[in-house]
Length: 199
Length: 199
Image (cartoon, rainbow over all chains, first blue to last red; front, side, top):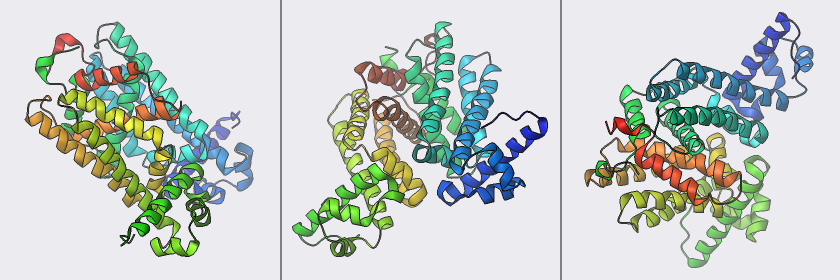
């Protein structure tokens, strides 16, 4: 994917990526076509091929663009909170909000494991790396209990993914605050009986 | 899928399902074919169509069979432990062990959301329902802290799924005990700083 040299080129690239996200999200990779993407984006097929050599290439670019936008959206939400458990909640809320505004997100990222596995792994590895860095920093500062930041990052990503599936995607709305409360109680304090205390 | 009336019919059905699991796991739904499945199972195509009307039909049956086998495998592991936090660990270990022995599991179940979404939702909803029942029972007995059993079930399923992806599937081996220790510390006690105590 070339870096467009002009603002106009940048806008065309953005239109193509948005159109491809809608097309792949609604129809899936196999049924999607370059001609539908260009029709949605209102650009010619000739223009499409200036930016991407193939349907596969724009699919990988969409996965990377979604990953980038999601990481930015979550990082912004998390950075605004000084209480680090509140920051965790803000990060999960930002993720679920992103899911609502990108209805094709799950379908596209999950389909990536069949279409472009490198883009799929990179999507999760970059998300996890940033998350683990932030968790490690907070634990080192005493704002979280000590613990393995990488395992925690993958655990919380999985938790967010499955809560998003169950409480957002399958119901097409945001979860009730009580669901978030219950998720945060789990992330904060776990499920061991209280008398056993921390390890 | 008809219930075979004879032991021989049962064995043929089992061979077809095992062959289809291998075929879908290795090649994916689109590239898989009924003729490859019957060749792997060493049955004729005529016999195949006595059991399943189509490739789609056996795909849904494979997803249901994997779900059934996984629930049974995990329930057995969990039931053997009297300490309920040890039972949680045994459940996750059983899941990861199952992933190792069914290398096509992730691919098949994740592809189901595009091929047979009913089977995909049913797979997770049945797993979650059994898990939530067990968590609710343990919390009511005081063996776990009180909390929303359904949110906990989906959270722990998500955690298991992502740890399985990161530490098993992408590395093709079981995680080190330290990874399980870290995951269990997270599930047991969460990440909130200790001085804040339980809510």
